[in-house]
Length: 130
Image 1 (spheres, rainbow, N blue to C red):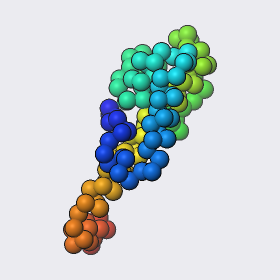
Image 2 (image 1 turned 60 degrees about the vertical axis):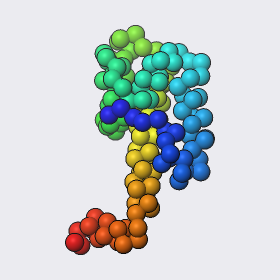
Image 3 (image 1 turned 180 degrees about the horizontal axis):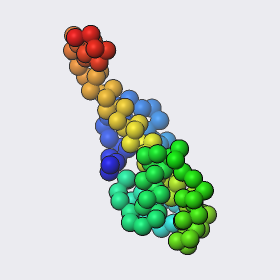
């Protein structure tokens, strides 16, 4: 799925590290590197990329534990360098991590904006007690 920008209100309202994460995103997606800026930004945002690099970064973001030497070999066969593969890997992992963090922060924001009685019902419902 396409990822939201990490600088959302939900993220910044609960996360004292939001600015550090924003700087990290900038360093990964905008610093000088082998892979073009637009490609790293596209990967981090979770948007589709065609070809072997697209398949690889989707796998990193969704099922990183399934990455094999063959995945890397197919990227080498498509003329990607080790530096480009590394940058794509870091971009995909960062994007997936920020997406998951933002989802959790949004859930916290929604939960803590409820009245206490709604929180109790929500917890009871989640635990299968209602």
